[in-house]
Length: 278
Image (tube, rainbow, N blue to C red):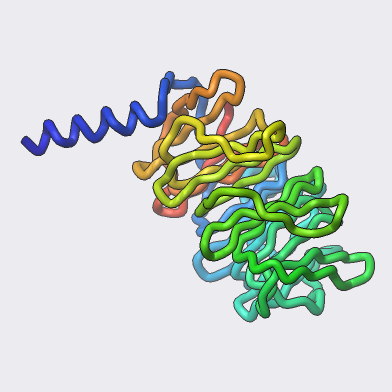
């Protein structure tokens, strides 16, 4: 009886994902364990371990420990790296050392040296400008922010309301719908997951989120050509925006990180580190 139920559940999950052909590819393990990883692209890979120690991926295929302790780290494609410590202080890695910006945030997302956004401790969100060692702050009550290298900025409130930053008017504007997670990539690639795990893609033509096949717990986007997700079992999928088909990749992971150039890394449930070669 229990076996029949398990088989039925598996069939329902597969049906929800849609067609899932397997894709050839290889995950290569990198020595070390991390609890957080951020991929800027190429070999711009940074991570934190469970103690908050900071590591940068080096040309020898290993990790170089960087002085300091952080709670969050974010690396961009141009090599820009920012971090937040346990006191919510925002730091910029410059010329081999961490420099306090004088700004406090709960979380950040960095896409380039001039595209640095954070959720303020006191509420609202802000864009940090290293040129003037300050920022522009907005009262929109976001608890999550996601940015891309082309300047695309999106966010979610604690209730799942969706906002994007209108660059023409320099203000956040609400988009219909509700999501629990949102991921933004280069070229207006915007995807999200709602509380039930249903997956949505933002349609630039209609300015609405449209449901696409799949039930996921995590989604990561580098661009429309680099959309990846995990389901509750840790299975890994890549989405084809043209065919609307999820293709299963080998392996199982707990977290993914993808860059705009398609560089894909992940952590398993034990914190072991892997990168993917198609």
